[in-house]
View 1: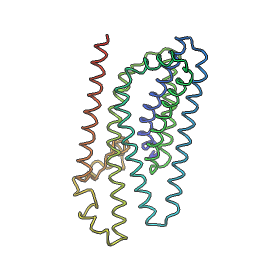
View 2: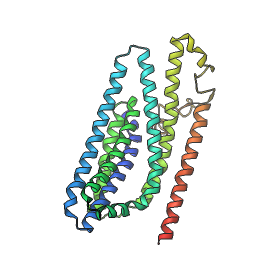
View 3: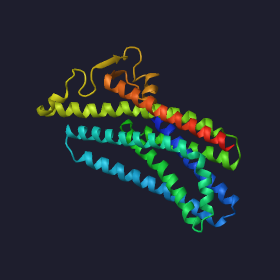
View 4: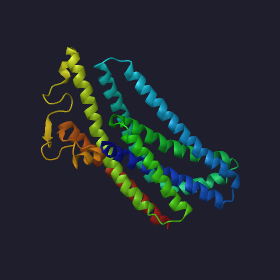
Length: 301
């Protein structure tokens, strides 16, 4: 059951990123067929295969580096290094997912025209390959980083990622192969809001990981004891609330909130403040990007 709960956030993230990549591939295929550039089709498939292969290789390489770096260090420093590396990966995932959410909200409107322009180029095959390869690699790399940042949850994140890829593939087939009507705009807006909350949860989790590392380091190194100026935490400030008696993060529904949105039954001031700042700021820029895109579409029509 715990695997199911830990699989939920990666399922949502990979579903969104996977469907985004599938949309790019689908648009490229539609443009290629419209332009009757049949010679470009193999380059589309090569771009997909190359992007997927590179994403998988990057995932294995990073996982190997993380495992090797922690396995060579004895306890308790092993835990300190593991928590620190997990926190750094979490920061990378936060930056990548936030940037891509805002970037795609602004660039989606011009994607088709960019692809059609590439098809008119004398080096169309190469440009089409690069468009597809970069799109798949970009989304795959983000998914890999997010999954690696969740590896402390066991096999659940990996299972969620696999399920997300499969569902995204089925949705792409329904849309492009069988012409099933899917409200793409509504899908990405809902998934965008969920992504903001999930990434906000990462902020809470990353702070917790750095706090664990700092607490352990202060315990074994007296010179670092000054870091922990609060009784309940080392770097997170004073405890804000303890909801373990009525909404435990180890039981339903608290465990769902923890898996998806980073809920913790015990929250400290720094976690609360940074979570609010991050979610409100990202939401502001996200909805502003959507509003700008809608205005551009109205002017174009």
